[in-house]
Length: 93
Image (cartoon, rainbow, N blue to C red; front, side):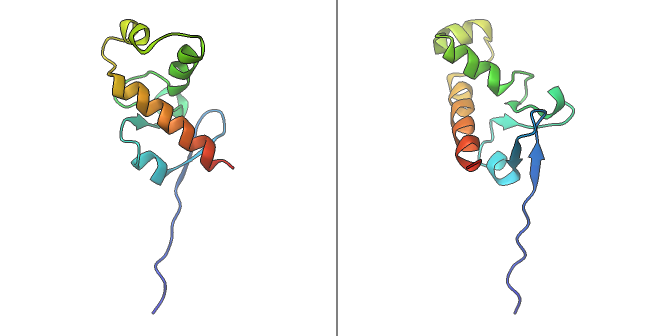
């Protein structure tokens, strides 16, 4: 009997970072679509890049301040962006 075939599907965002399909599937709130911002990871259903949320947090903005600028975002969306980014960085090593 043959072992099951393992297939790895990777998406490359516009910065050249490879993101595996399994990583995307584990983060349902994040989307990578070549037709949306050239494949930049975004909050699903929006055109808000994960990177912009991280930059806002790094700049000292609170979750509430981010939600004031993007009222349709839920706190969970912002947390999903942070978790996704952490896992992408961990997987890249």
